[in-house]
Amino acid sequence: QVQLVESGGGLVQAGGSLRLSCAASGSIFGINTMGWYRQSPGKQRELVATITRGGSTNYADSVLGRFTISRDNGKDTAYLQMNDLKPEDTAVYYCYVDRVLAGDIYWGKGTLVTVSS
Image (cartoon, rainbow, N blue to C red; front, side):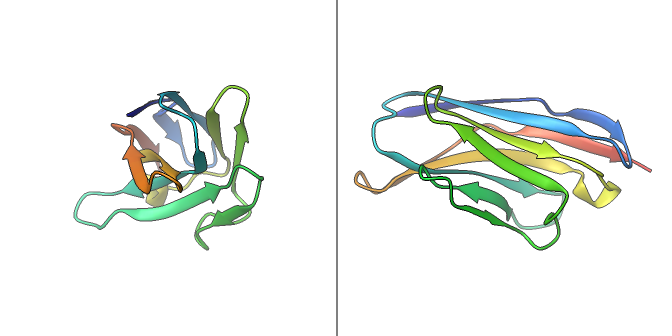
């Protein structure tokens, strides 16, 4: 089992910044991709950004150029730096990791980001 603890959410005005963290613990051997998804009320969960153990990144078009994902493999922690936040970024942000060899995925409990206009 892998446990994920997210932090860094909160309330911010449009144009502001937040930094989310996701710390993995437990059976962390074999974690490959770490990433963030988000879900707004009435909408499906959507990809925000992912990063592989080797550092390859992938972003949703809606956050490209504003959000930056990074990770510290030594700390088994991923980060999401969110700049120039917009009201439409308001959502619960979920961290996830996958373990390719084990063939499983784990989700955090989510952290709420609210962007006021």
